[in-house]
Image 1 (cartoon, one colour):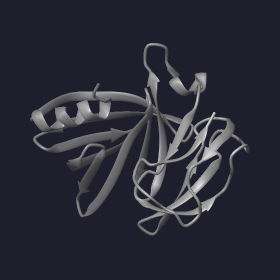
Image 2: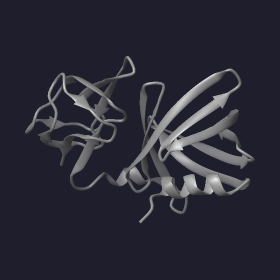
Image 3: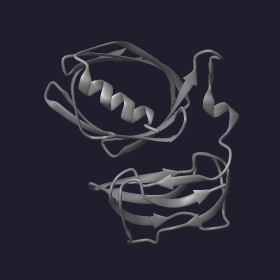
Length: 184
């Protein structure tokens, strides 16, 4: 079954004009609206009050290169569960919750159930393991630090719970989307 990201990539490649797509999201405990409109390879984006005119290239699923005037940004996007995404831009990791418009509440308000995998956002090297198997962890607490492209990314727990396993050690090389630790 194709993911929402895969379907969106296919849509970007096959359409020269896409109607405005509106999303209500929660980023860093703040709610905002994102509007996207594509015309012939360019995207007009509005994130809250800010507007952007971007050229977008997607060299592979989940990877986007944005060209904005004289600046270039690469974003890696992956779903960790329905209505919840992780995005890395410029070495910064963001957790994004998509808000259920019908009920006007964040899907993260209900808490995340079951085991959750913490994954590497991109290839890199583990520089620190902050918590070990059996340790209690709070929502948003750092578990592993991965260095990629000379930037350190703290991989944080998507829920409060207990670390069930840590699958990496300090100094280990990791691949994009490799499971680093498991929380339940």
